[in-house]
Image (cartoon, rainbow, N blue to C red; front, side, top):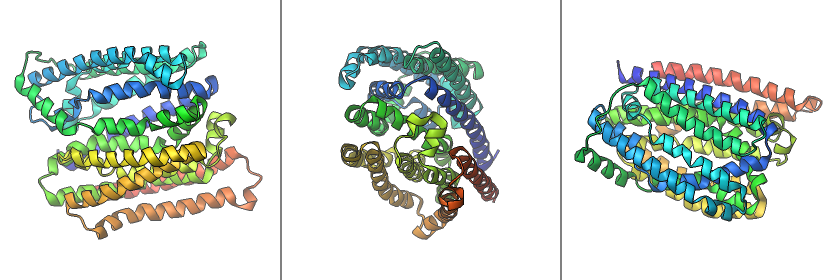
Length: 472
């Protein structure tokens, strides 16, 4: 099978899995938002700060190392990967458990003590994951990885809803995360039932250490960026505001959460296979740069036009009390989509240091702009500060990616032009629908339906366009 067919097949599996997983999670969040309070979601976001911090400090990058290694199908090499991963999972669980009082102290909430200790079980199960699944990913066979993700998501959603209905409150969300980790791990072993050779392998251990040193710092920087809302808003504005921001951000990033991990997961090994062929590398990257924003632009423009009507309709009145927040977060989603077209390229060609520099720049700018924005304008100011940080990162990523692929600025503009055109036309139609005088009597629900129809038609047309480009 050719690289193009393998990549297309892998993207198909991942896209189907992501759409199913995120679709189910979205439906679950609609129910959970009505069963739980905003501060329950804020409490979970605050709890995840310490688990993310501990996880990134001990980052090894087993999955990426397997994808880069020529020994990715060697049972003894994968046995070494399993031993390291299992030990790290147990260490993470212990560190998160003993750090629970620190979380409760920082956010001034004793309820976070039990939440953190429940979350501590999650890395224990993750560490027992099947390394053969990552070996399959290197060969762009994503069936097992995709199915395990969906099965784990179903377990998480079912657990969270049942516990919330039983009146468990915020801890229902923590139970869901733990069940997700356990079920995903079990599914991975059932779907790829192969044996490991657990004998010591000094060569494999050295290879993992070398890769971990090369990638050092990137996960910690990404963690700081992802946990910035909890660290800043959760502290300055309180857990209820953090909960509203978290659900609004989840709503705006839904399209990119479906598309971007798919392309990131699939394209890094694909880039690795063509990194010595400059022409093919440039061709693949330019197609990605033109295709990924084209997928996300229609729902992003819809969010800008509808603004607070969306969370009010989806989650309830108490979640739509901040006009302008959805529009600001939609801008963040657009900029995130553009910058994410470069990260997999840097990892695929063996230059994670470039991605590290981009994320470092983003975090440094965010620390200033988002904090000041939160102090002056609350949640909206924080979101606008995040946008400024993404712009700074994009100004670094695009020139570096252009240099790595030897692409011209004209080729880059040509690749981005269709998404810009579609975004402009779609935004104009959406604004016409939402601001026209003859629409003043239309309820928010029907307005969302009309804009949603425009979005779906646009996405279908863009999908047909991308299919023709991929086949060409």
